[in-house]
Length: 308
Image (spheres, rainbow, N blue to C red):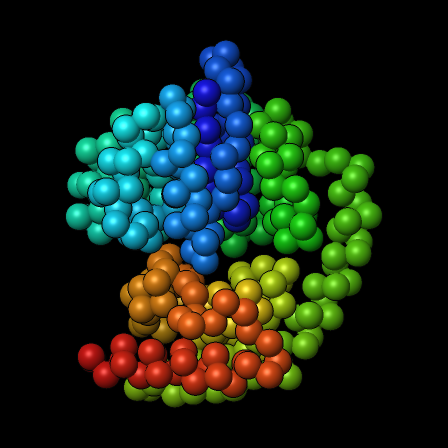
């Protein structure tokens, strides 16, 4: 049995869909084992250790985020085989070395994870190539394929991620069910984006202005970050504090700040232009606890920038 784990993002779900398609085309049974978010990834890796005689695929998750990486992989590999692991986020040389000892194939690159999965597993398959192109369109913020925004909205509206991965793996990119969900979500998202500015707090580190806002969980981080940066020209870096305890950092292209380096201080990672993690000590952020969350994040930011 192939068991697939991925991030819950459009890139992770698309990569999982390509792996499911690969399994189906080569007559293997496969299922989605779970989704890997920074906030609860350790529980999901514990679930992997309980698998038995499974062939495990991990997509769009950085191994640096796994606590006790080598002992965990050793335990997983006692009764299972890790066939493949990819991540588009920056990965340390040490983590790569450890993963290579237990995974048959690894892909660690700044290409999107769906592209990595397609290139490695199904480079000649037209559906896999289309899935990867849609994921690339969204993760690179190209906005050339309307389906990428639609699928990302469907994910954030709460559509079942396992079902969506299965649909994509079969080459199904839209459904009549999507229309009603998208209409409702579109209005909800518009209201939530407008509400962002009401929570804006600006902090200065060195010569850069960081704008903090409280964001509802269903707002896509890319859109929320772009919205904040477009609405306030004096902000260099958008810092989104989500109600579920996540922190997302997104910067303007011209700002010489590496968001992924900052995110490591929040037990996260990502890319130089956008990255994320979690706020320590806070499993959720409410209107009442927002200022405390900003205080914690601000303290960590100051410690980070004092090194320079």
